[in-house]
Length: 136
Ligand code: NI
Image 1 (cartoon, rainbow, N blue to C red):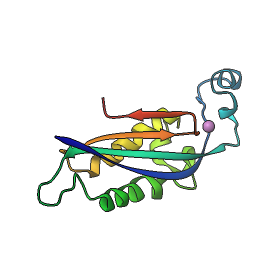
Image 2 (image 1 turned 30 degrees about the vertical axis):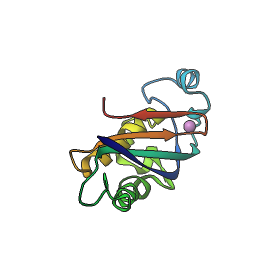
Image 3 (image 1 turned 90 degrees about the vertical axis):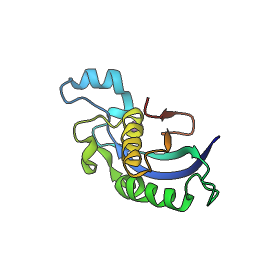
């Protein structure tokens, strides 16, 4: 029997979507407003879900306080009020699309969680646009 424990989180960050090897016309055609050279911001919302067996001693899949602390140290402290392109090393050579951001967040959290726990991360770039990654 497996149960999923989830926690919501939030960060604000700026980004620009572009490929330096493309012309500005090509970048505009593919990335539109997200190619604004002076960057723009999003209010990102996050749902982190951890699935595993219930520990018979504690009754927890994992202590949500510990999950909260991991999200703070790995995601909020790293991304909140940052320029993803300029301030976050993972995006130095990686376009900070919602798809790439959710994979980076997954990898950071997966590295600190107990190995037996399954992880899924859902990232909302806007209230209507969101992406998910579970490591597959
Ligand atoms: Ni954008």
